[in-house]
Image (spheres, rainbow, N blue to C red):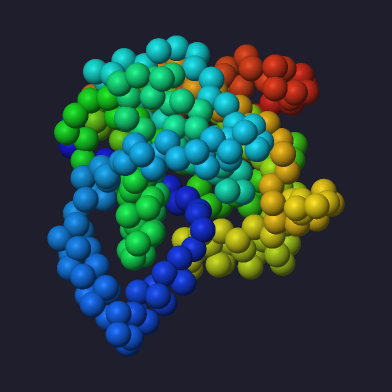
Amino acid sequence: MGLVEIREPQSTSSGPSLHVIFIGLFFTRFWFLSMLYSAWWYLDRDTPRKGGRQIQTIKRWCVWKYLADYFPVSLIKTVDLDPTQNYIAGFHPHGVLATGAFTNFCTEATGFSSVFPGIRPHLMMLTLWFRIPFFRDYIMSGGMCPSLIPLPHCGNLMVIIVGGAQEALDARPGSYTLLLRNRKGFVKLALLHGASLLPIFSFGENELFDQMDNPSGSWLRWIQEKLQKVMGISLPVFHGRGIFQYSFGLLPYRRQITTVVGKPIKVKQNINPSSDEVDRLHQQYMTELCNLFETHKIKYNVPPEQHLEFR
């Protein structure tokens, strides 16, 4: 298989302080540390594009288990995944911080390797995060990869938060609106490389924070969308709970997150797919995602009359 390019944006925590530390060390007696890291960075520059450098010891840190138990977070399998195949998975919804995506696919807190033996997960991120010194090594250790990675082997699961940073602006309790109707790039990639499409829905992802009202056309939404276009990340105005009280703070609410992995959609490789072929597969993916949601929603406290909305 060749190269896979993902353009959907995803948000994460910023690392300006690491840039300051990295540059600042050059002006201290510890300048050689930044010099050594610069040499390492240069020699290691292609590693993110080759699939990263997962470190199982870091993925199994006990702190991730505490993180998963806080909400709690759980991973549900509906069918086995064939380790002789590659998969492109759409993760929905983004939520404010994509907590379910990180916990399930970048750590072993929910036992991914036991649930899906022989499958190697990668969470797609924007290339810009791999230009931050030190931080790039940390995120690669969890299996995160930039928007361009090679797939020389089978058993890869590429998880794309399809709604990206823009969808985070709609992340609030009770919201089931997904930015998916015109997001077809991941579907075309599946056709180009013959990778199975895999729908994933994370129940409870939008329940972790309250967000300031920002309907389309409002001044706040206008500012957020402008900043998102410039910075590549969104800036939702949100709050959760505090440490000793539950009414206000930046900690997420303790709400259960259940990430359900659906049934793969087999895709036949087509190196020159037409727009109609992409549209048909995209519609099939949306249908399978809706079926996944409808099948499991009652179990995870979603009202029977609630359905997914696409925009």
